[in-house]
Image (cartoon, rainbow, N blue to C red; front, top):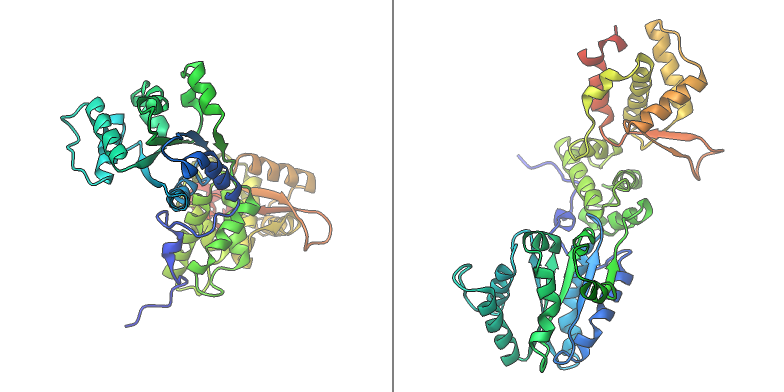
Length: 390
């Protein structure tokens, strides 16, 4: 029996290991890194550099570090210089000794992880680099983990250039989410680091949409509609996290395949979001008023039925009033409905935004970020909130 047709053409384009050809909204930061390492590119034996790269989760730090690892050796070769870039994850290699062992292994040497001191390993590494006329740039990814386990490590890293004054063979890129690890650094070290600092800001929704669009080749033509991409971007914009956005559309695609849907719908995106943190704490529903639950039931029913990103507050009010009438409950007036919508938004149970182009006038649009419409309807209709349907 043949497998059902998938929405994916090449899902590997969405995985963390994939290094994209383009770097949407990070070209300027990548160029800044290349400028800081320009001396190494042009005259590797006489220049050394330590650069700081920081930004929150999903802001593209590791991606542009990998892109730098691609470009530096090529640009240095044009000037007759041999430059090698080594990426090290400091959550794995939590000591400078472990980093030195990894560096030597990258040059073809076999060293045990124990049995040699840091000084012995460093001396061997520097001798090897000098004999090969090679300049090594080590990318210390999540460097704060290294500093936490060895507070003196940062001072050592910034002073390595002084150990080879005649021929520079070592530079570093320090990558972290924040710069908190610099608080305990002496002023001279801090001053030298701050002069070579590249910071990444969280991605807003429009940039996340560009990033998702740049990976659309992962899907078959027409399988990932614009409204589903926009919803994923809007949800991920709460964190400014590109990885989160890509995980959303990947997870939504898998859910579409499981349901044998030819397209990734907004409801698939909401269902994928429900599987990622932060998640809706379902016990919070029991603390809502009866009318707030009815409003939520109206929102989830409309979203599931229309399979859209958002519904207008006017549509919600009509559906809410119909639910109240069916239950024999007096519906609240517009002002109280508005207040309940704002309270649900404040609690993070619904998402709201003002309408833009494509609608006449300005109105409040309501959506779900933490849970799928189907799942929310199920929770509202079962025992936890049985009075909604009693």
